[in-house]
Length: 198
Length: 173
Image 1 (cartoon, each protein chain N blue to C red):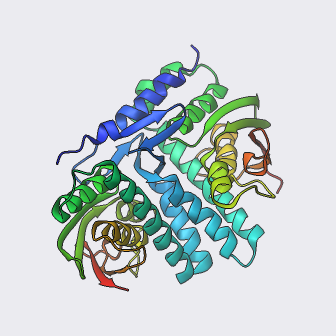
Image 2 (spheres, rainbow over the protein chains, first blue to last red):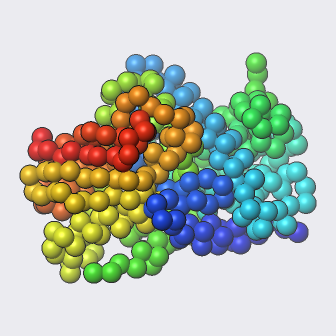
């Protein structure tokens, strides 16, 4: 069965309309929030600019994205919504990656496409209109370096989840780079995850 | 005035919008990990960045929302709408019971950030609702027709420190 991205997006859109009595959105095993992308971009790029060591700040932002991608998608993979909506579509190990990417699209993180999966070795994702790249361009103009820290971390996290050691030991076994970014004028953002060098 | 929030939440292509402004869905793992990263790295400057980012985004969002709904004119209805928007966004419950143009108190018995922090990191020793503080400052500036930064919001009690509820004090800067 092919991965039905529209069906996954529909499930997220429907599920995210449900509030429990405390005003919390429990969906796919996590607590969701709807927050302006302006907030996230202000935090990431504000942190980068305020930090004494900019490279270190960027590394922390990528790690935050990776750790969160790892825990978030693990929660999602263990949820009843996953079992009901997503699991029936999965035939191969690699299908999981396509399903995770469909959920990321549903979350409004960008127009993501899996370009290449080499089992256990390499994952290439292209993104159009990532909110990070778009937000940087809007606020600061053309960048001199790639800016999609969250999506870079998430790309590595998907490999950690699918090919790394069992949860929770597999995080950071893969690392990703962003080779192209729309914030610096490239045609799309390109993320490549490979085994981390230790 | 009743707002149909479900109609306000829309997908256009791959982008998500709430009341015409771009939003993203993120879960507590990301939101609270970002908070911890900023606090650990920048200390009080990190907390201030979280507060200011939230204040700016809530100010912009609520200004846009009020402009789209010119029939919402009274302070009472604006406060109610602010509270329901907080809830719709999955941020929790917020009560503007003792508030006026010169400040006052705001209470939150439940919030995304408290639930997420306690689930992920456990109890804190100090108040940690920087997002909510900034959010309150931003919407109140819109509601009372003030400039951004007009109000300062402090957290007197916080559920992250196992208080019964989060209590915020609003004063003029």
